[in-house]
Length: 452
Ligand code: ADP
Image 1 (tube, helix red, strand yellow):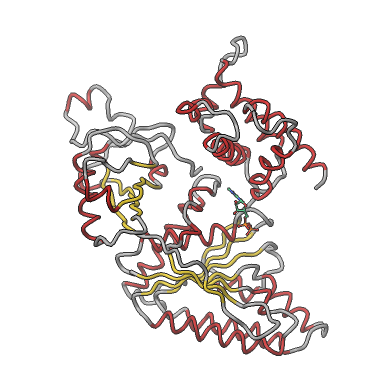
Image 2: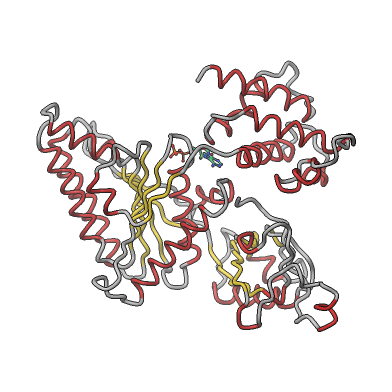
């Protein structure tokens, strides 16, 4: 589960023997100095900042060295006594350390080597391809990291490991290419296929992954772009034009890729339309040049494979229908399923916390996180002997668990809409306490499911 975990990074000093004997470090694995855990620290610059990335990085590194405070995986306050950082930095965040920390183990600061990534969000928005009159545009282009995708990675909640697996896979693929590993000896390519039911966050995950990688690899690739291909428009009814569209699209991508400091992500959504087009051509119900378009696309993708700085991200809602020629090309095929109970709890919890932050639901101010704890903490709190009453503050998370249970069968997309639908169903939407809201949300979920 990739929710913020309560990890503590503290005391930037090596442990002494008595600490070890006292069991201070007993819960964490004994890590030798040279085996420190690499933890990413992402630093987002203010849009107005013109500071040099290297200067900000060194400043943050110095700041982290000095710190001897405890803090959780998540935001670190920008130090107010550092005018350079306050002027230039919007936020600092510790990311993805949760994969090292299980069951509330404590990761001590001496075990950690922070890796600082500094970036500035692009505010340019998508640059749409202006196709000829009457046609759907065939692609959108984004400069990464883009403001629109900010926070997307953190908002996507999956069973443990999926996001990390994708991140590590892409990192290994880029490293192998960078080091020039002989593809005849070790074969790999840079194509990822996410498949599963609609609304499970596949497209968002691809975009969020591209954004993450653009931040993590910014030292090697100072520029990154995402090209979002609209497969539907490529295989639209204008088949006679499709060949031209594919050629135009890949010519554009090729130009981007030739710049070796560019990291290029190509996202092809709903690749099953490739298979549909080919099948339709074979059955004679579509013009036969559709098959040429599919083949052209596959050939172009193969050509791109030789470029080290491209990652192709694809999604499909129906695994069985994906063109077999395509499936073979993908290195990592990850199934993205409907959210589990734990994921549903965390998705709804993040919605509720947001509504409390924005004062749509009455809030307990600083206590919101305590009253609505994450799944692991909630399980602990609720796991009291049958005879003992659940304490009042935890009634809310008990209700939230009930809501998550009632939402079985809903996709991540429907879950994120549910609080809105529940709010619209309230008799008095202006003064709403979270408990009453949760009751309405459970009713709304039951109604939504009955209408599936
Ligand atoms: P797909 O491509 O699988 O149809 P999308 O990427 O279009 O799904 O998902 C739509 C929205 O649904 C996402 O932007 C996100 O808000 C929400 N969503 C889906 N799955 C999840 C999830 N596992 N965790 C959090 N939000 C999710």
